[in-house]
Amino acid sequence: MQTLLQFAVETHGQTAAKPGFFEALGIDWKLLLLQGIAFLVLVFFLKKFVYPSMVKAIDDRQAAIEQGTKAAEVAKEKAAAAESDVNKMFKEARAQADEIVATAHKEALAMVEDAESKARKRADRIVSDAKAQLEQDVTAARAALRSETRELVALATEKIIKEKIDQKRDASLIESALGEAR
Image 1 (cartoon, one colour):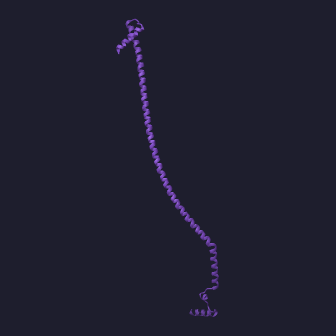
Image 2: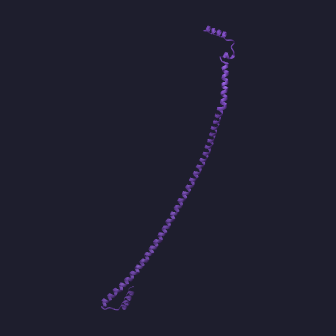
Image 3: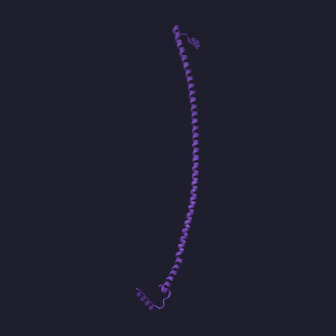
């Protein structure tokens, strides 16, 4: 194998003139130059057309993210303020409801007292009307009783005496008898 390697080196040394730096490394300098120019052209086109739009898109995206973050913070602050306002309104509503209930209770008590007062007055009036009616009925009954008593006394006297006395005399006798009876 060593012999084969020596043979290859000798044959290669005979065919090629002095090898250069790039040839010693196995690099074709023409191809390397062409690839370098193509790379520079690619970088130029990327820098001219692609990178600006990419950078702009990245900047826009970052600005949108920052704006969204700020909007989220503002929304969070507004939500906290709204929650505070809602709690405050709930407290006020509860206070108003308590006040309304207390007022309604007071009004109900006042209405009950008023109704009781009216009922007492009406009951007193009914009792006084009944007393007045009773007195009228008693007076009327007494008057009827007196009248009937006079007639009975007159009839009894007539039956006892067996003759009719005139009405004036009847009335005076009956009145004197009733006066004695009282």
